[in-house]
Image (cartoon, rainbow, N blue to C red; front, top):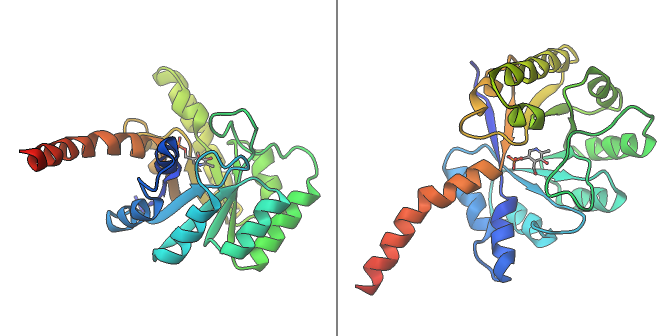
Length: 239
Ligand code: PXP
């Protein structure tokens, strides 16, 4: 198995920070921890409603920490402008709905999408690697390839939500087959969404997998891995 890169999504560090409207927990500090603990890149989703990551998070992490930055964003002129200014190392274009709690599946690419194609070309021209978030469906993968994307991030939500071994095996097979196609098209293969400590290994072992982008499970686990020492440290201080 080759070395699969890990992109760590820090959106929910910002969710927690925003809950009190304070400076902590700081996304810059989170980014430093990601890089010093073996994470290969920091991932942030700058949503149009700015519900977690703010423009200043992307700017500060870019300028204050050394390391690869991967920006997830909707394919809109506003986001394109921000990406061209901040210059993340890579961008993933994702669909975004106003009321969704998190990204709901991959981009629907069954129709011609000249605006999307233009954004892909402009970002590529600026030296930013572009991936498109798609369901594990040949049509969407081929469409993203034809539009000039460098990479496909396969949406693993259905696999992650699959209940029972049989259904999970079926969803894993869809990801594997989609992965073959991505590699046949000589694109980078990424995957993510809903991956956790129990379901990640079979996805990491998909042939040709280059990178997994994982957020919620890592930040959630981080709370419990870290809470023990945080409580002990406070107790020590007040003794
Ligand atoms: N990949 C994409 C394209 C996403 O939109 C998200 C969620 O922001 C993730 C990966 C990470 O998903 P999760 O937080 O469930 O690990």
